[in-house]
Length: 305
Image (cartoon, rainbow, N blue to C red):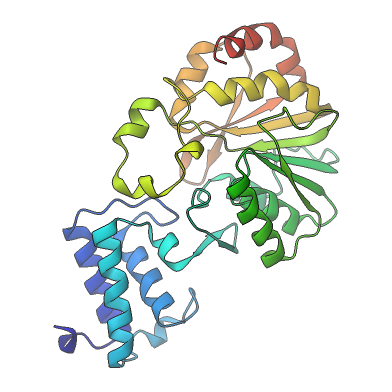
């Protein structure tokens, strides 16, 4: 069979066809079979991810064919996300090391980072930023990369995730990032930020249990968040004002749990971000609004933990 496949394009097409036939699930940085097949082929050939299409007709030697086909087989048999097979994920235009220690970087918050959090920042001065539930460190590191004059803290409860984040700090040379161990805000007493960005776990118990096998390779700690997916988000909303400067603001991702949050706190003014592909369950909240509605938020959060 491999004799019939010759060029880079041949193998990309073949891989995509096999992935679709096997019923694989996509959503870890890439959302379709063709892009994942491309990623795996280029990785196996030690070629850059943005290789010119002019090389599509380049022919593979026997050893290269074997490497590509072996990767394809692992993707199908083990249902491992392609980014875990290559050890690399792209986020906000940067290459991050990725493995089982943290979720694969894929948050639409990348788009906000690349636009300097405008128009939500509103031109206000930002000096200190917190990335809560940092995982691989992608949000904190990308923010620090594009704003070297900002001091960025990256906090997480997982020691494994923190070790990966440290490796990515070194990989991307961002000395203005500090990695901190903290269970949400519990380890951040006295720390105050102009902006808090967070992509906490927000998947419901039912949704987590029903996720495709690909997600079982990721740490469940980064996904599961209660019956409505809001166990951690409510705690963040409750405690964020204590760690925000007077004109500070919070950006938080809750995904499909957006509807549950709006139902629980209809009186809380939240600005839901419109991305290029539409709404993605990410809101912006001003400190003054969180303070004004603190009593209602606290009652809901306290009932969870």
